[in-house]
Length: 201
View 1: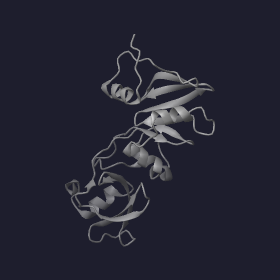
View 2: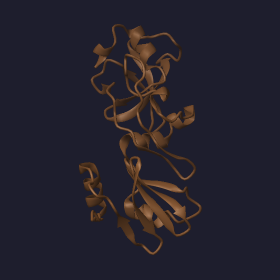
View 3: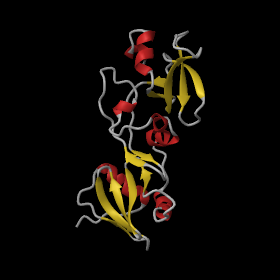
View 4: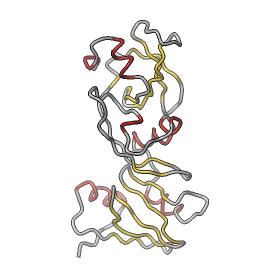
């Protein structure tokens, strides 16, 4: 994938402070070479693994490095939640930078475990979210899928969201109500996975 760059200096400029995938795992380019300064040596850059937060010396021309776009979605934890969408930015379109997101994240949020979970789609299960959503010690919104989550709206009621729409409700009594007239294939797949039928009448 190194053909995206016409020189190593071009790669250094375009990859600085950008998240790319290395063997499918999100990594953040710190903007420094393996020697710890701005100079470039032997095509190796320092990439921070967002799962382990350990710096790794990786050759940017290695086949394991992918500069392609990747899917986003639910981002957050008990203190902060948002739904991230990608915005087009600059001609090289390499990986993900902070200005690529529709919500301006802080630098620490951009390289957090929440970003790792957002990119890889690692979220609690639907059952886990059902058990937690009415606990006031957790946040008011909890994701159970890359594109779906619950938001506590009242003491005993939560709305179920899919992308930008409310598709149903969940009550503290345990009742789930999905009301979608014509679900997309993706939503059909999500509902099947969580074992919930929709009412399209």
